[in-house]
Length: 104
Ligand code: TYC
Image 1: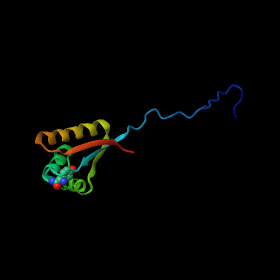
Image 2: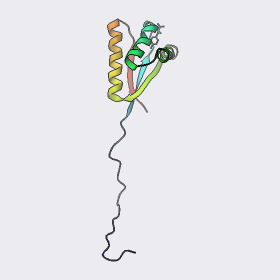
Image 3: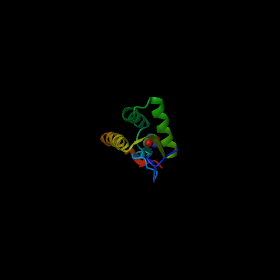
Image 4: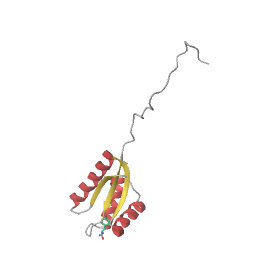
């Protein structure tokens, strides 16, 4: 039981968590009619550290459906990886495109 000298601490409002979870971004592989399948698989291996089998599956999914999510990660990593992959394609003279978009 609290008598007159006891201190009573009451929380007036619920405190909000200080750190918001950073938004995640998708790297998306887009299909085109010209880039060789082997090159797409190679880029997925080199830039996204995928095995040949995983890279082939992702490449074939984009080939059949038009696009495929390659990875979901922090914004700066998604943008860096996407640019690295697009630069390799450009250097090789292929229209291969990776894009990024926020995850819902
Ligand atoms: N469609 C290409 C071809 O038939 C291969 C390809 C697959 C290109 C996936 C891009 O994201 C891609 N040569």
